[in-house]
Length: 296
Image 1 (tube, rainbow, N blue to C red):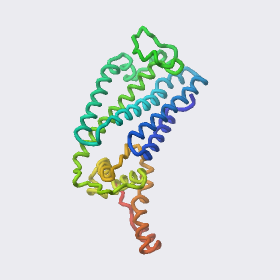
Image 2: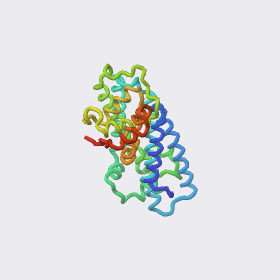
Image 3: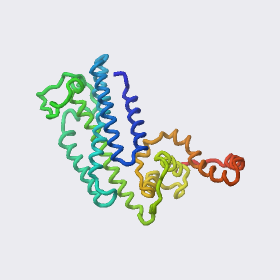
Image 4: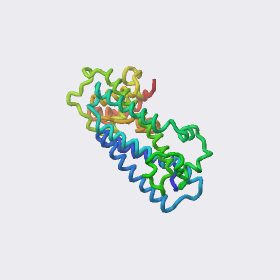
């Protein structure tokens, strides 16, 4: 297994970012990620079954860290697809109630299948003394009273406990996702629909462009004297344009945003006034206008 965990994480995050910016909604985004991760995991399975592992450490690292990360993302996105396809209309009491129910179901699953076990305590404590037992192939001990899904796993590509780790990680990801949905609905409810009305106004550029604009407005302190949070700016524009942007913080690195801010803020203005006064006038003007880029 040549790929490192950091490389795989970066690769999956890049794919998530790309799909998030092009998908029309969360359902399509979750579906595309589910298909991608399923195929990605299958390709890694082929590599592992054909090439094996160089040594014991590589095998343990794969089944403790690498495979669980990929599988947890697959479980996570598939669950989001199922949640979203059964979700009521966006916003309102039914919406909040629905995600509250999802949160309770997740907590119940956590109580019944995850936290009340010796393995969970072993994994969460960061211990490694039993890694050879838990994360090497062919060591399944049925005397431990394992869950029935042990009979469904691929013995050439699972130690059983790699699946347990994946479900622990997926549970944490889903917990954060559902809480964000509940909190976002509460924040959105505080933004009066009377004061923010789309009136047929549509965002016809890319999601990427809107996210850049949000960061530019936030970083330049252009709204509410710079005292408004970026999430509230995002929610207001999402509501105005009837668009879903996903997680802004995973969209760009801080360096990417910093390098793009001047063009994002000034380029549309430059084009507009350039048509009226001429390009030379605009170049002279903007050469003397420092970017007021700050964060509150």
